[in-house]
Image (cartoon, rainbow, N blue to C red; front, side):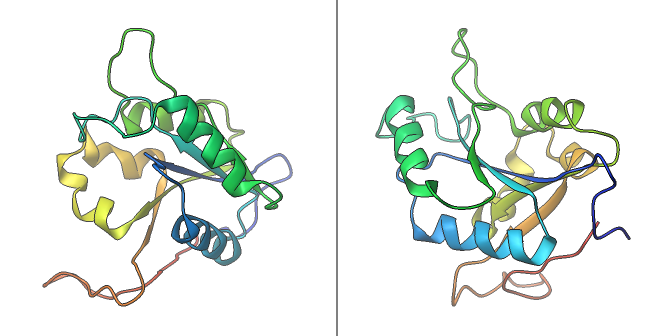
Length: 163
């Protein structure tokens, strides 16, 4: 298990979502993951077209992007990413495809993570080609304070394992 990046590697977590609006919980989860896993960067990526939310977000993409930029301003290691911006075709954004693109731009020594809340994790089986996601990026799953794990699932809270 490697806990630090190689000489040219970076440790990056992709944190995608609607961010409608971004809130203190998003920041707390990202801070905890950054500290626990010695992440260089947490990429906050508002999604263009969320396939699991066909009605879309309340705010338009540009407004959600601006809100996310304001929420993370001045936070070391946090960046806004356009990796999940709306596609010209209007096609949905799929996390697997976004992670593959990010992985391709990362040095071989780098580490890519996918940061998500437990609510997203519990619904992962409904995602596009979900079984492939952990082979592209290690998962970081965080629960909400006081959230109990579902029956049959071990543990609770933020559990981090270094890749």
